[in-house]
Length: 375
Image (cartoon, rainbow, N blue to C red; front, top):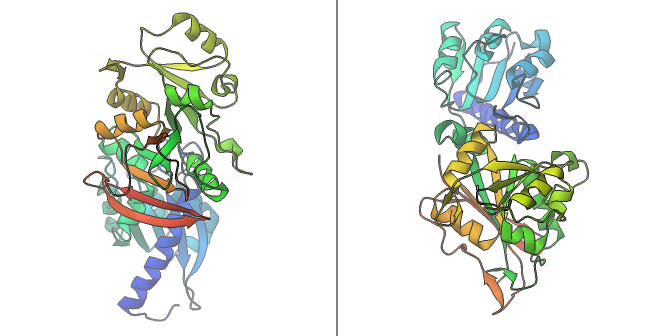
């Protein structure tokens, strides 16, 4: 049996394993459909210090849940152990019992939870099941860190739309491109690889038709081992102008491409795109552009929880003006573009109110900064 430990030591242990559970939860981020990517660790101490005996993360597609996976790995070692869960265990019945009941049946004696679940079927009910069974519960440990990881799910639950990440690469003088030159390299290889890693954790990438035509991008994940995690590509294209010869259209059967178009779009080009495998999202227009709040609501109904907006300036500005951005990710390259550059609609010295700086990093010669606003 483990020796008696102080409250301070227990807090240190709890924080250590919850931080590990949050890191582990990233494994399937962007792959769990309507369910969140939750991490669970089963930890027991038989006298020689706490040891992880079971790990689980929400499975691809959303089932089984993390608790079920971790308990299966732990087996009988779960009896008498502590479970660290990044989101309150579910309390609602389906074909299988809720995760809170599974923890009780497995003999778990203590549960440490991080983020609260806003789903009314769960909120508070999961912890109530545990407490009624005599299980010790500690709530909201590293809750902000877990909520940051679960922001897509929380946004779908609370705001009824996906989390929107605005990603921009800026030159040293605040430009995102050069007029008439299409796509140009602003940041280095290390930063670009980081962008690909960000894409792999999202459900969709959004660009405007101007960027799609001028840059002819692929918008896929091209990191070794992660190519299969390319998210859907969405083009804001009110008039259905995306060329059927574009890289996006030509790869639509390999990685999904959606065109958000309005009824007044080019019917002939639309038909050609559909033959290439491009799918269309029926959208409304407002002030001469795709109505973004309605589009995001439809994406949430399709099970999308995280979308990353990558271009261009007009598209970024539209999301900002509609107050639909939840996370701002800026990559700064070391070189200036000059007077023929395309000015970014945002920079670190004029971040909208309500955002807070969450993290900074250096990737080679490039600087990264990320701001988030609470849901």
